[in-house]
Length: 418
Image (cartoon, rainbow, N blue to C red; front, top):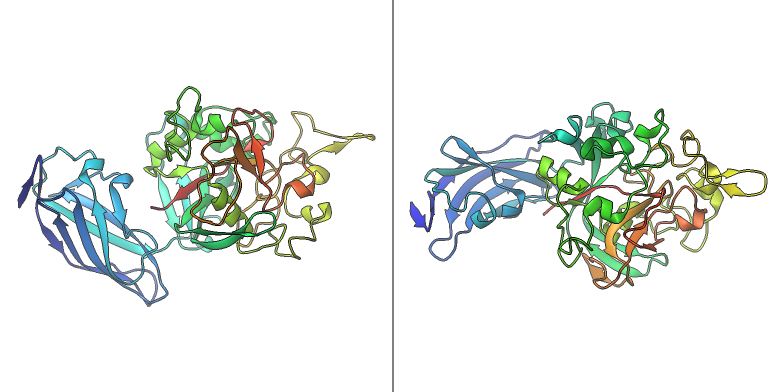
């Protein structure tokens, strides 16, 4: 054992394996723990993954002091935890980023578990705005999700997210910017609904509030600052200059504290478009045609709610917004009412505009772009129920004031994997 200031660490070696689902079951073995004493407090956790060459696994770490389980925050762990292939790997624990910095730990040990990368993640919001914890469950395939992914459960009391594998794509309306994303992330299958917002925050901000239909409609009438915090009175809330910091007691602060997922946030501009396109380079994400054609209003009829398929109403002389208490036949539609894209994501075209993290700025060839740093505007995506089809395409970007309040502004949730 070695003494490291106020942290005492025992060197522990664990061996074993974890059997998983199918015949070619990945295993974890040769787990070894070593602190980088005397030059550092960092703790190296080495292990070996045995799996097929094409398989990828996620590795979960559980730490103990003897039989007492230690809570290690996600931010204190780095290294090979997600989308891990075969071979020797390493996770690094930084005690300085956890509540155990000044704790004497004499019997430190870890247990590693692994599973094939889950495609779906479900956050159970049932306990509402006073909850201290939201249970999280993962599923390998859509067929494994209880009740199926189109069940209203995932539009009301549970938040359903789909894993997006990192990769490269051509970004922008003219698909002429080569962008690479290096990290996997989970994104909401649906836009956040009024019921989900109410369960997390206790509030009901939406304009379209017909009680018979509101639960499964997207929450709207939200400023960017309502979701993450106001940079005017809290300058530390200023992506990308201050990273993923959000104002206390906002939607994302509550969601993070109750799940432990500290990277839950709005998607970046690039994450949103990559997920929307789902491998396509066409004007809409149905994959038809080329970017320069097949962008008619008629093509939008099956892809999402927009001005001419119920979003607005023709009164005989003009198209007008529907009444506040309208059913979901008009105005914002019930989420999931139209066709999903190739990755099973709904309403990426139309219904409501969706805030993304980025400040407004020009696009460029980039890896993991975070947007501009000196704009007063933020980017919104997807178009809305009051727009014509050519405002709702995959590459369409809109600059909006983050304090703008409209009955067409909402969002979806992303959790970026470390």
